[in-house]
Amino acid sequence: MHVVVPFGADDPKTRLSPVLDADERREFAEAMLADVLDALDAFGSEPTVVADAPVDCAAPVTVDERPLSAAVNARLDDTDDTKAVVMADLALATPAALARLFDTEGDVVLAPGRGGGTNAVVARHPEFRVDYHGVSVRDHREAVRATGASLATVDSFRLATDVDEPADLVEVLLHAEGRAPAWLREAGFAVTATDGRVDVDR
Amino acid sequence: MHVVVPFGADDPKTRLSPVLDADERREFAEAMLADVLDALDAFGSEPTVVADAPVDCAAPVTVDERPLSAAVNARLDDTDDTKAVVMADLALATPAALARLFDTEGDVVLAPGRGGGTNAVVARHPEFRVDYHGVSVRDHREAVRATGASLATVDSFRLATDVDEPADLVEVLLHAEGRAPAWLREAGFAVTATDGRVDVDR
Image 1: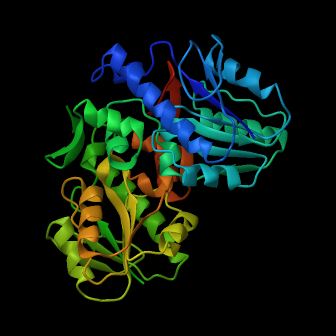
Image 2: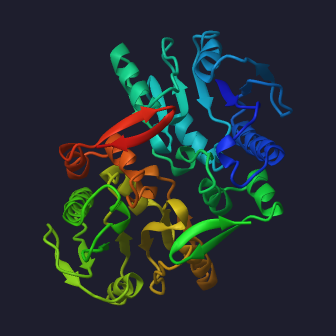
Image 3: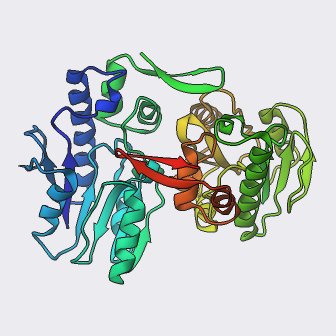
Protein backbone atom coordinates (compact mmCIF):
# COMPACT_ATOMS: atom_id res chain seq x y z
CA MET A 1 0.00 0.00 0.00
CA HIS A 2 1.19 3.48 -0.89
CA VAL A 3 0.85 5.75 2.12
CA VAL A 4 1.11 9.51 1.66
CA VAL A 5 1.91 11.55 4.77
CA PRO A 6 1.37 15.27 4.12
CA PHE A 7 3.53 17.55 6.25
CA GLY A 8 3.40 21.33 6.46
CA ALA A 9 7.10 22.06 6.78
CA ASP A 10 6.94 25.76 6.00
CA ASP A 11 5.97 27.51 9.28
CA PRO A 12 4.23 24.47 10.77
CA LYS A 13 1.44 24.46 13.36
CA THR A 14 0.80 28.20 13.46
CA ARG A 15 -2.22 27.73 15.75
CA LEU A 16 0.20 26.58 18.46
CA SER A 17 1.87 30.02 18.38
CA PRO A 18 0.28 31.07 21.72
CA VAL A 19 2.38 28.42 23.48
CA LEU A 20 5.31 27.59 21.17
CA ASP A 21 7.70 29.83 19.20
CA ALA A 22 8.51 29.11 15.54
CA ASP A 23 11.53 26.88 16.24
CA GLU A 24 9.62 24.94 18.87
CA ARG A 25 6.64 24.43 16.56
CA ARG A 26 8.98 23.04 13.94
CA GLU A 27 10.64 20.67 16.42
CA PHE A 28 7.32 19.51 17.85
CA ALA A 29 5.78 19.01 14.37
CA GLU A 30 8.80 16.91 13.36
CA ALA A 31 8.45 14.85 16.56
CA MET A 32 4.82 14.11 15.68
CA LEU A 33 5.79 13.22 12.10
CA ALA A 34 8.45 10.82 13.42
CA ASP A 35 5.86 9.17 15.71
CA VAL A 36 3.41 8.74 12.81
CA LEU A 37 6.16 7.23 10.63
CA ASP A 38 7.08 4.89 13.49
CA ALA A 39 3.47 3.72 13.82
CA LEU A 40 3.29 3.18 10.04
CA ASP A 41 6.57 1.27 10.11
CA ALA A 42 4.76 -1.66 11.75
CA PHE A 43 3.00 -2.27 8.42
CA GLY A 44 5.98 -2.15 6.06
CA SER A 45 3.93 0.42 4.20
CA GLU A 46 6.79 2.52 2.80
CA PRO A 47 5.24 5.94 3.30
CA THR A 48 6.13 9.01 1.28
CA VAL A 49 6.14 12.35 3.06
CA VAL A 50 4.73 15.13 0.88
CA ALA A 51 5.90 18.47 2.22
CA ASP A 52 5.85 22.08 1.11
CA ALA A 53 9.51 22.47 2.08
CA PRO A 54 12.38 20.07 2.80
CA VAL A 55 12.17 18.09 6.05
CA ASP A 56 14.54 15.64 7.64
CA CYS A 57 12.74 12.41 8.53
CA ALA A 58 12.91 8.62 8.29
CA ALA A 59 10.95 8.38 5.00
CA PRO A 60 11.43 9.62 1.43
CA VAL A 61 10.26 13.23 1.05
CA THR A 62 8.67 14.77 -2.04
CA VAL A 63 8.61 18.56 -1.93
CA ASP A 64 5.49 19.97 -3.58
CA GLU A 65 4.63 23.60 -3.03
CA ARG A 66 1.05 23.37 -4.29
CA PRO A 67 -1.85 23.54 -1.82
CA LEU A 68 -2.36 20.41 0.29
CA SER A 69 -5.13 18.75 -1.73
CA ALA A 70 -3.36 19.22 -5.07
CA ALA A 71 -0.06 17.92 -3.69
CA VAL A 72 -1.74 14.80 -2.23
CA ASN A 73 -3.82 14.15 -5.34
CA ALA A 74 -0.71 14.29 -7.52
CA ARG A 75 0.52 11.25 -5.57
CA LEU A 76 -2.85 9.50 -5.82
CA ASP A 77 -2.66 9.96 -9.60
CA ASP A 78 0.54 7.90 -9.67
CA THR A 79 -1.10 4.54 -9.03
CA ASP A 80 -4.33 2.61 -9.28
CA ASP A 81 -3.35 0.39 -6.34
CA THR A 82 -4.68 0.82 -2.82
CA LYS A 83 -3.36 4.01 -1.30
CA ALA A 84 -3.73 5.76 2.00
CA VAL A 85 -3.29 9.29 3.29
CA VAL A 86 -2.38 9.71 6.95
CA MET A 87 -1.88 13.16 8.45
CA ALA A 88 1.48 13.91 10.05
CA ASP A 89 0.01 15.44 13.22
CA LEU A 90 -1.78 12.33 14.49
CA ALA A 91 0.40 12.15 17.57
CA LEU A 92 -1.90 9.58 19.19
CA ALA A 93 -1.73 7.15 16.25
CA THR A 94 -0.67 3.63 17.20
CA PRO A 95 -0.10 0.52 15.07
CA ALA A 96 -3.37 -0.86 16.52
CA ALA A 97 -5.37 2.21 15.46
CA LEU A 98 -3.81 2.17 11.99
CA ALA A 99 -4.48 -1.57 11.70
CA ARG A 100 -8.19 -0.89 12.21
CA LEU A 101 -8.01 1.74 9.45
CA PHE A 102 -6.13 -0.51 7.01
CA ASP A 103 -8.21 -3.62 7.83
CA THR A 104 -11.62 -1.99 7.40
CA GLU A 105 -13.29 -3.12 4.20
CA GLY A 106 -14.69 -0.61 1.73
CA ASP A 107 -13.71 1.12 -1.49
CA VAL A 108 -13.00 4.19 0.61
CA VAL A 109 -12.40 4.18 4.36
CA LEU A 110 -12.42 7.49 6.22
CA ALA A 111 -11.08 8.32 9.66
CA PRO A 112 -12.91 11.55 10.59
CA GLY A 113 -11.01 14.23 12.43
CA ARG A 114 -12.50 16.49 15.03
CA GLY A 115 -14.14 19.58 13.60
CA GLY A 116 -15.16 18.15 10.26
CA GLY A 117 -11.72 17.11 9.07
CA THR A 118 -10.52 13.91 7.43
CA ASN A 119 -7.46 12.67 9.26
CA ALA A 120 -6.82 9.46 7.36
CA VAL A 121 -8.15 7.74 4.25
CA VAL A 122 -7.71 4.38 2.59
CA ALA A 123 -8.74 4.48 -1.07
CA ARG A 124 -9.18 1.24 -2.99
CA HIS A 125 -11.14 3.02 -5.70
CA PRO A 126 -9.03 4.54 -8.50
CA GLU A 127 -11.13 7.70 -8.84
CA PHE A 128 -10.96 8.87 -5.21
CA ARG A 129 -9.27 12.22 -4.73
CA VAL A 130 -8.98 14.34 -1.58
CA ASP A 131 -10.35 17.83 -0.99
CA TYR A 132 -9.34 19.18 2.38
CA HIS A 133 -10.99 22.55 1.91
CA GLY A 134 -14.14 23.20 3.94
CA VAL A 135 -15.96 20.42 5.81
CA SER A 136 -13.82 17.73 4.26
CA VAL A 137 -15.36 14.68 5.92
CA ARG A 138 -18.78 15.64 4.61
CA ASP A 139 -17.40 16.46 1.15
CA HIS A 140 -15.46 13.19 0.98
CA ARG A 141 -18.57 11.19 1.95
CA GLU A 142 -20.61 12.90 -0.74
CA ALA A 143 -17.90 12.43 -3.35
CA VAL A 144 -17.63 8.71 -2.58
CA ARG A 145 -21.40 8.25 -2.75
CA ALA A 146 -21.50 10.13 -6.05
CA THR A 147 -19.12 7.62 -7.62
CA GLY A 148 -21.15 4.67 -6.32
CA ALA A 149 -18.15 3.34 -4.39
CA SER A 150 -18.67 1.76 -0.96
CA LEU A 151 -17.84 3.91 2.05
CA ALA A 152 -16.71 2.88 5.54
CA THR A 153 -15.69 4.85 8.60
CA VAL A 154 -13.22 4.04 11.35
CA ASP A 155 -14.34 5.08 14.81
CA SER A 156 -11.04 6.02 16.46
CA PHE A 157 -10.31 8.72 19.01
CA ARG A 158 -6.60 8.31 18.26
CA LEU A 159 -7.08 8.95 14.54
CA ALA A 160 -9.66 11.70 15.17
CA THR A 161 -7.18 13.71 17.22
CA ASP A 162 -5.03 15.92 15.03
CA VAL A 163 -2.92 18.35 17.00
CA ASP A 164 -3.54 21.94 16.00
CA GLU A 165 -4.33 23.99 19.08
CA PRO A 166 -2.97 24.36 22.61
CA ALA A 167 -5.92 22.37 24.05
CA ASP A 168 -4.90 19.41 21.87
CA LEU A 169 -1.64 19.13 23.80
CA VAL A 170 -3.68 17.67 26.68
CA GLU A 171 -4.45 14.66 24.48
CA VAL A 172 -0.79 14.23 23.50
CA LEU A 173 0.35 14.29 27.13
CA LEU A 174 -2.40 11.93 28.33
CA HIS A 175 -2.63 9.42 25.49
CA ALA A 176 0.41 9.51 23.21
CA GLU A 177 3.70 7.67 23.52
CA GLY A 178 6.86 8.47 21.66
CA ARG A 179 8.75 11.59 20.75
CA ALA A 180 5.90 14.12 20.77
CA PRO A 181 4.83 13.73 24.42
CA ALA A 182 8.48 13.39 25.43
CA TRP A 183 9.25 16.66 23.63
CA LEU A 184 6.38 18.42 25.43
CA ARG A 185 7.47 17.16 28.84
CA GLU A 186 11.06 18.16 28.12
CA ALA A 187 9.76 21.64 27.21
CA GLY A 188 8.02 21.83 30.58
CA PHE A 189 4.43 21.11 29.65
CA ALA A 190 2.16 19.27 32.07
CA VAL A 191 -1.56 18.57 32.34
CA THR A 192 -3.28 20.53 35.07
CA ALA A 193 -6.81 20.65 36.44
CA THR A 194 -8.15 23.87 37.87
CA ASP A 195 -11.79 24.57 38.74
CA GLY A 196 -12.89 21.43 36.94
CA ARG A 197 -11.21 22.44 33.65
CA VAL A 198 -8.29 20.43 32.31
CA ASP A 199 -5.55 22.32 30.49
CA VAL A 200 -1.82 22.35 29.82
CA ASP A 201 0.56 24.46 31.79
CA ARG A 202 4.20 25.28 31.08
CA MET B 1 -25.06 -5.68 33.19
CA HIS B 2 -26.08 -2.71 35.32
CA VAL B 3 -25.60 0.50 33.33
CA VAL B 4 -25.67 3.82 35.13
CA VAL B 5 -26.33 6.90 33.00
CA PRO B 6 -25.63 10.09 34.96
CA PHE B 7 -27.64 13.09 33.83
CA GLY B 8 -27.32 16.67 35.02
CA ALA B 9 -31.00 17.65 35.02
CA ASP B 10 -30.64 20.78 37.11
CA ASP B 11 -29.57 23.58 34.71
CA PRO B 12 -27.97 21.22 32.16
CA LYS B 13 -25.15 22.02 29.73
CA THR B 14 -24.32 25.48 31.02
CA ARG B 15 -21.29 25.74 28.69
CA LEU B 16 -23.75 25.80 25.77
CA SER B 17 -25.24 29.05 27.12
CA PRO B 18 -23.58 31.16 24.40
CA VAL B 19 -25.78 29.46 21.79
CA LEU B 20 -28.78 27.99 23.68
CA ASP B 21 -31.07 29.45 26.33
CA ALA B 22 -31.96 27.49 29.48
CA ASP B 23 -35.08 25.83 28.05
CA GLU B 24 -33.24 24.88 24.86
CA ARG B 25 -30.32 23.44 26.79
CA ARG B 26 -32.73 21.29 28.74
CA GLU B 27 -34.49 20.06 25.57
CA PHE B 28 -31.22 19.36 23.79
CA ALA B 29 -29.76 17.55 26.82
CA GLU B 30 -32.87 15.36 27.04
CA ALA B 31 -32.60 14.61 23.29
CA MET B 32 -29.02 13.42 23.81
CA LEU B 33 -30.07 11.33 26.81
CA ALA B 34 -32.83 9.72 24.73
CA ASP B 35 -30.31 8.89 21.98
CA VAL B 36 -27.91 7.32 24.48
CA LEU B 37 -30.74 5.25 26.00
CA ASP B 38 -31.75 4.16 22.49
CA ALA B 39 -28.21 3.03 21.72
CA LEU B 40 -28.09 1.13 25.04
CA ASP B 41 -31.44 -0.46 24.30
CA ALA B 42 -29.77 -2.67 21.68
CA PHE B 43 -28.06 -4.54 24.54
CA GLY B 44 -31.06 -5.15 26.79
CA SER B 45 -28.89 -3.58 29.47
CA GLU B 46 -31.65 -1.98 31.57
CA PRO B 47 -29.96 1.31 32.34
CA THR B 48 -30.70 3.46 35.35
CA VAL B 49 -30.53 7.23 34.92
CA VAL B 50 -29.03 8.93 37.95
CA ALA B 51 -30.02 12.58 37.94
CA ASP B 52 -29.78 15.53 40.30
CA ALA B 53 -33.43 16.43 39.59
CA PRO B 54 -36.38 14.60 38.04
CA VAL B 55 -36.24 13.94 34.31
CA ASP B 56 -38.73 12.35 31.94
CA CYS B 57 -37.07 9.60 29.93
CA ALA B 58 -37.42 5.99 28.75
CA ALA B 59 -35.51 4.47 31.70
CA PRO B 60 -35.96 4.36 35.47
CA VAL B 61 -34.62 7.50 37.14
CA THR B 62 -32.98 7.74 40.56
CA VAL B 63 -32.75 11.28 41.86
CA ASP B 64 -29.58 11.82 43.86
CA GLU B 65 -28.53 15.36 44.69
CA ARG B 66 -25.02 14.51 45.74
CA PRO B 67 -22.08 15.44 43.49
CA LEU B 68 -21.70 13.29 40.37
CA SER B 69 -19.02 10.88 41.62
CA ALA B 70 -20.81 10.17 44.92
CA ALA B 71 -24.14 9.62 43.17
CA VAL B 72 -22.61 7.18 40.68
CA ASN B 73 -20.58 5.35 43.30
CA ALA B 74 -23.70 4.82 45.40
CA ARG B 75 -25.07 2.77 42.47
CA LEU B 76 -21.77 0.88 42.07
CA ASP B 77 -21.97 -0.04 45.75
CA ASP B 78 -25.27 -1.83 45.09
CA THR B 79 -23.80 -4.79 43.24
CA ASP B 80 -20.66 -6.86 42.76
CA ASP B 81 -21.73 -7.78 39.22
CA THR B 82 -20.37 -6.16 36.10
CA LYS B 83 -21.51 -2.59 35.84
CA ALA B 84 -21.02 0.24 33.39
CA VAL B 85 -21.27 4.01 33.51
CA VAL B 86 -22.12 5.79 30.26
CA MET B 87 -22.45 9.56 30.13
CA ALA B 88 -25.76 11.01 28.94
CA ASP B 89 -24.17 13.52 26.55
CA LEU B 90 -22.53 11.02 24.21
CA ALA B 91 -24.69 12.08 21.29
CA LEU B 92 -22.49 10.17 18.83
CA ALA B 93 -22.81 6.84 20.66
CA THR B 94 -24.03 3.97 18.51
CA PRO B 95 -24.76 0.33 19.36
CA ALA B 96 -21.55 -0.57 17.48
CA ALA B 97 -19.42 1.79 19.56
CA LEU B 98 -21.01 0.56 22.79
CA ALA B 99 -20.52 -3.05 21.68
CA ARG B 100 -16.79 -2.40 21.43
CA LEU B 101 -16.89 -0.98 24.97
CA PHE B 102 -18.87 -3.87 26.42
CA ASP B 103 -16.96 -6.57 24.50
CA THR B 104 -13.47 -5.38 25.47
CA GLU B 105 -11.89 -7.67 28.02
CA GLY B 106 -10.39 -6.32 31.23
CA ASP B 107 -11.31 -5.83 34.86
CA VAL B 108 -11.86 -2.18 34.05
CA VAL B 109 -12.42 -0.81 30.55
CA LEU B 110 -12.21 2.96 30.03
CA ALA B 111 -13.48 5.06 27.14
CA PRO B 112 -11.50 8.31 27.46
CA GLY B 113 -13.23 11.57 26.74
CA ARG B 114 -11.60 14.55 25.14
CA GLY B 115 -9.84 16.83 27.58
CA GLY B 116 -8.93 14.22 30.16
CA GLY B 117 -12.41 12.98 30.90
CA THR B 118 -13.80 9.47 31.29
CA ASN B 119 -16.90 9.13 29.14
CA ALA B 120 -17.70 5.48 29.75
CA VAL B 121 -16.48 2.69 31.99
CA VAL B 122 -17.10 -1.02 32.32
CA ALA B 123 -16.11 -2.33 35.75
CA ARG B 124 -15.84 -6.05 36.34
CA HIS B 125 -13.82 -5.48 39.50
CA PRO B 126 -15.88 -4.98 42.68
CA GLU B 127 -13.61 -2.29 44.13
CA PHE B 128 -13.69 0.12 41.19
CA ARG B 129 -15.22 3.51 41.98
CA VAL B 130 -15.36 6.64 39.84
CA ASP B 131 -13.82 10.02 40.54
CA TYR B 132 -14.76 12.58 37.93
CA HIS B 133 -12.96 15.45 39.59
CA GLY B 134 -9.76 16.63 37.89
CA VAL B 135 -8.05 14.65 35.13
CA SER B 136 -10.33 11.69 35.58
CA VAL B 137 -8.93 9.38 32.91
CA ARG B 138 -5.48 9.64 34.47
CA ASP B 139 -6.85 9.20 37.97
CA HIS B 140 -8.94 6.19 36.96
CA ARG B 141 -5.94 4.54 35.29
CA GLU B 142 -3.83 5.05 38.40
CA ALA B 143 -6.59 3.79 40.68
CA VAL B 144 -7.04 0.61 38.62
CA ARG B 145 -3.30 -0.05 38.56
CA ALA B 146 -3.12 0.48 42.33
CA THR B 147 -5.66 -2.29 42.90
CA GLY B 148 -3.75 -4.68 40.59
CA ALA B 149 -6.80 -5.06 38.34
CA SER B 150 -6.32 -5.30 34.56
CA LEU B 151 -7.02 -2.16 32.54
CA ALA B 152 -8.15 -1.79 28.94
CA THR B 153 -9.05 1.22 26.83
CA VAL B 154 -11.54 1.58 23.99
CA ASP B 155 -10.33 3.77 21.14
CA SER B 156 -13.57 5.41 19.97
CA PHE B 157 -14.14 8.89 18.60
CA ARG B 158 -17.87 8.41 19.19
CA LEU B 159 -17.40 7.63 22.87
CA ALA B 160 -14.68 10.29 23.28
CA THR B 161 -17.04 13.03 22.12
CA ASP B 162 -19.09 14.39 24.99
CA VAL B 163 -21.07 17.47 24.06
CA ASP B 164 -20.26 20.40 26.32
CA GLU B 165 -19.35 23.40 24.20
CA PRO B 166 -20.67 25.09 21.05
CA ALA B 167 -17.81 23.64 18.96
CA ASP B 168 -18.99 20.13 19.91
CA LEU B 169 -22.24 20.74 18.05
CA VAL B 170 -20.25 20.33 14.81
CA GLU B 171 -19.66 16.70 15.74
CA VAL B 172 -23.34 16.12 16.53
CA LEU B 173 -24.43 17.57 13.19
CA LEU B 174 -21.81 15.68 11.17
CA HIS B 175 -21.71 12.29 12.89
CA ALA B 176 -24.78 11.67 15.08
CA GLU B 177 -28.13 10.25 14.15
CA GLY B 178 -31.30 10.47 16.18
CA ARG B 179 -33.02 13.13 18.20
CA ALA B 180 -30.05 15.35 19.10
CA PRO B 181 -28.95 16.26 15.53
CA ALA B 182 -32.62 16.51 14.50
CA TRP B 183 -33.23 18.92 17.39
CA LEU B 184 -30.26 21.07 16.34
CA ARG B 185 -31.38 21.19 12.70
CA GLU B 186 -34.92 22.05 13.77
CA ALA B 187 -33.47 24.88 15.88
CA GLY B 188 -31.69 26.22 12.82
CA PHE B 189 -28.13 25.02 13.38
CA ALA B 190 -25.94 24.09 10.43
CA VAL B 191 -22.27 23.36 9.90
CA THR B 192 -20.42 26.10 8.07
CA ALA B 193 -16.88 26.52 6.79
CA THR B 194 -15.37 29.97 6.63
CA ASP B 195 -11.69 30.76 6.05
CA GLY B 196 -10.76 27.14 6.54
CA ARG B 197 -12.42 26.94 9.99
CA VAL B 198 -15.45 24.74 10.54
CA ASP B 199 -18.10 25.97 12.95
CA VAL B 200 -21.84 25.94 13.61
CA ASP B 201 -24.11 28.74 12.56
CA ARG B 202 -27.69 29.40 13.56
